[in-house]
Image 1 (spheres, rainbow, N blue to C red):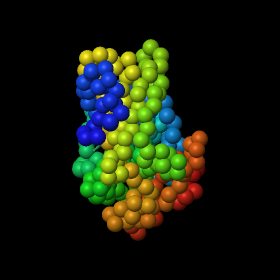
Image 2: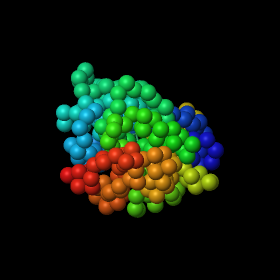
Image 3: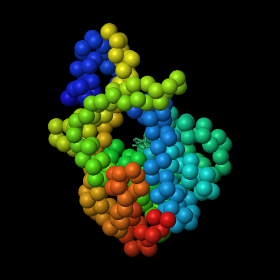
Image 4: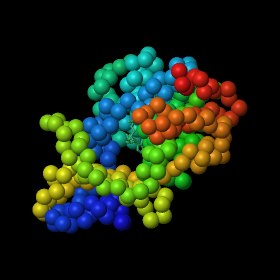
Length: 275
Ligand SMILES: C[S@@+](CC[C@H](N)C(=O)[O-])C[C@H]1O[C@@H](n2cnc3c(N)ncnc32)[C@H](O)[C@@H]1O
């Protein structure tokens, strides 16, 4: 495999003489697809709302996307700044809460952003920290530290348990995704890089695979990270040793919540995050 297309998708395209048109999963038609795929997912919302209740002040939702976590936080009465690299993703969020006075959407890169205020709570949901490689995560940590109010809490999720193990093996399967006129079948393809550091994921609509076509292949590259690596990085970046708790899902430990504060800050307790 070279580039953003997996070997399995390359082979499927070759079999019908079609060409790949790579498209980032979070922009253009990718943003619409992601919203259809993940929009209804309620995972992590309960935990993020509990963290919000345990803190007092504005919230920063990093890589907020279409606002899966932002919207419930705003609806709970909190002021939220949502940043994301993709204006297409943020457009979905703006449409969900048009003109809402407690929401600010900012197109910004989590590796380097500069906002006017400091935040009581900074979150990154949906394991989006894995979008960043080893050299990029320290940039994120530094940016978060610059934006954290004294005593503020930084919390993010990462895969754990069986879910983490399943990310590290190749997978090719058909998945039904809700579409405007009922479910559509997509090919999901996951391939692990030769160095084992990251996985490439592709999504291709099955009915697009026709002879000679130019076929949109939605792509993303995600690092394979575990809680121990991330915990060590946080401490190296000047945060306190994180507390790690499971997010409530059908399968315990599939998603883990890491939360920390600037070193020496009181932050929140385990009980706060579970409420
Ligand atoms: C998996 S989605 C998560 C969306 C949302 N937080 C959720 O829980 O569903 C990842 C998001 O990260 C955004 N993203 C990717 N790279 C980014 C970067 N360098 N800075 C900010 N956002 C980024 C994408 O545009 C996308 O909206």
